[in-house]
Image (cartoon, rainbow, N blue to C red; front, side, top):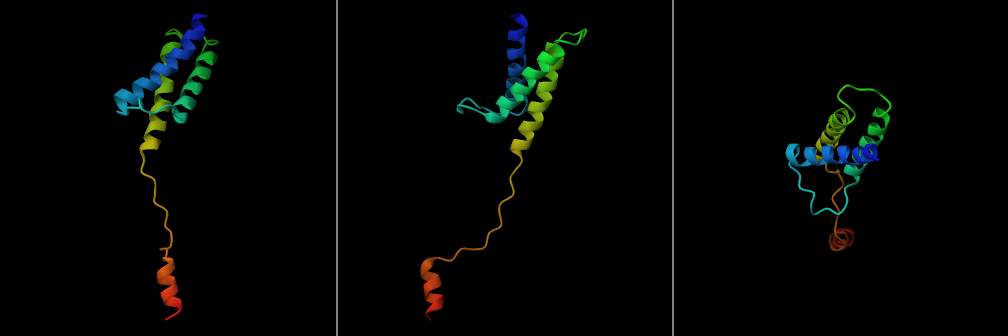
Length: 102
């Protein structure tokens, strides 16, 4: 039971620490963040995998570090400005009508 609690809260804490202290993002107004959920889910699976490996520092620290790095990369990718789409200028109906019938 304690391993399950660790596998839930260790990656969750890593995602929260990176988002608040490193990326300076306040997600308290968001009801759901899909990217953070996927990062947490990866951290959960990684913790369960690390349970089968005997690591001197335990499972929590390596899992939090790996999940934190993934959260940092995903967070930085979300902060990149998206390139605006280049579209042809749209003419209004009135200017098109005047151009055709002049």
